[in-house]
Image 1: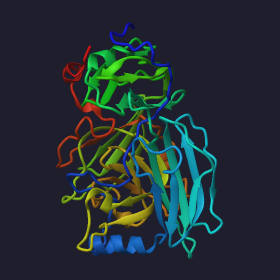
Image 2: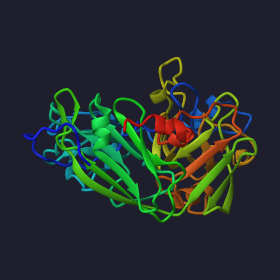
Image 3: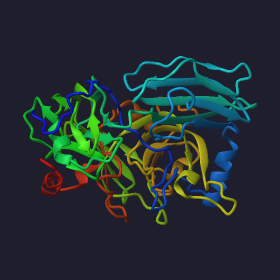
Image 4: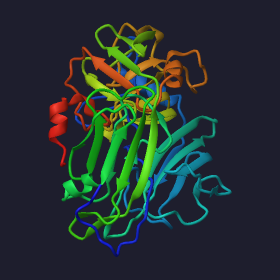
Length: 417
């Protein structure tokens, strides 16, 4: 595809970059949301306090902050812990290459062994244990510094991956784009199924691509970035020249009915499992709408303070450091996840959470027979989870990878070409 504006003197470069998502927390920024509670006569605060007492005292800090842009390639990346010791730190680039690093002899810090690459997304997964042996987990990602006169697009899904039928191609640019037509003209997304694929700008930095209906199962999608030399803003030029392909897996769509407190999992239109759930309480309702699984964590921390849920002392209303089998449904903090702290009687009978969808599970995420473990093992990034019959609004299309909540005509109206 011919691009109108190019800078011949700019050297060609390519960067394979994945999307950056915010810290794990079970809540949406403008509403309540959180880890599922208990159906016992205890108050929610008592339940959350009891859960917190059973979790690790270790406090993990990852630098730079999650979602940071233009991080130093030499000094910014580090991990520290208080009230515990680091037991495992894994840092990987967007290509999946592991970054070498060392945990200090005292177990209190970690840093990479050498410089990082420029203009690269890195992900860090950390485990620490306190004196009682209880584990805490933290996950983060950031992008290293790029040249001042260039822009890059962090895209998802990754090259060679297999994803669900709801997975859009989502590109987040590290600089505001003013010439959207030129930039979108340098990007093509096509499917072996022959489906029409159209781009939609949510703002000056985010461009998503999707077809009218979900991708056809078994098809192959190709993303071509021909942005080298494209002037996206005054004096700011693209550097990427890359072709990415990914596979669409089986068609799995799960429907959460908040009214009946059940979730029906369908593959290729056939029901394969019905699962009892506990969604958002009447005070902390769950969003309605079509949501796409964007991240999966076997265990992760959910802290109310990260989304504005704090008590009088400024601490999070809940802070559970080992939430099992968590799968993100929105950028602002909606998850479908395991719940080991709530009474078994709540699942299928009472909606008690801060806005997430909770399933029965055990502490430590070690029992494959739990319903949350089954769903986690049988779900992939890009699978669709539909929530209906909640007393809440429909989730915004740009809150996560959830553009399916926009009509096809509205979607096409957001294209610059």
